[in-house]
Image 1 (cartoon, rainbow, N blue to C red):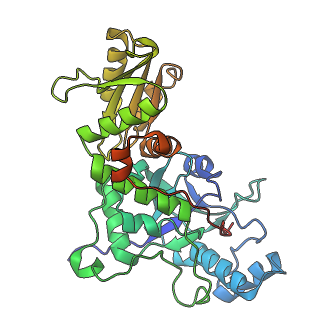
Image 2: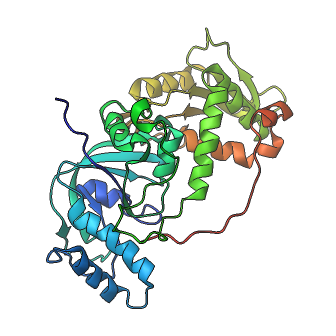
Image 3: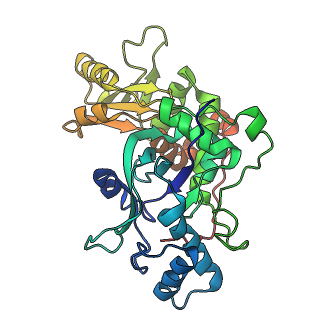
Length: 357
């Protein structure tokens, strides 16, 4: 008999990801809810609710129910062996770990670092590009803590943990499921307290998905060249079969011969690239007499590659998928008409939704 799929939980580390490094370094998940006291002796959902009401005496009933549901999940519903997913806003990557202990209330001087579960972080560099759009939408819920279950999400996240790739929902389990963010289970949160979705992150993920569909492989080099051209460079895209480790040459001036002269390598794979790619680019930087190098790695770089680049800040820059999308958006009106026809974008204003602690 096949082993049961563990439950998977989204546990954020601050409104702006400010507790991510602390969570990873200390092998924990959680934090926030600074107004709420120790939950160790709160062995029922009702007793957790009492502590939430004491911490938020002016809060409306729906908000109290929402916070109670999240903290009850952290206190009791999350089990040892379950999987925790941590989106990292600063890097655009996702960390995945396994819960290894019960709820703890830490004595950390920072009240934002007290309500936690011990976690063994197993992957800390999964790119968002490795996860399909419907599951990314679930991970875009504003709730600090919620279960990932829609669209076969639990099974898929265990596969991401194993292989680094999202295989998509299994047909018999995920085909009819709606594309919507997960919410805490019935009884944990009032029906009208459903979480808002991070619209900005959702829109960014949709753009990212569309870009890689249209520009995978050698075509991504032409998109990078178009962006650099819009930023004032004269670019030459090399032939795919004989690039010698350089996909785009870029320089200032009418012929692209003036400084700064760049060598650019473009990797469209969803996996983070490693040391070998960085070393090859370092070699190309010297052999071509370039001033600087740009590595466009759609899936980002792994930890070893990042360590190799620590002392290369003024010589080599890395763009992951988010960085490239940023560059596309800020130069969009200067991009060629045919490219804008392939990638039609519109700037809109949206109301900022209130986030949980």
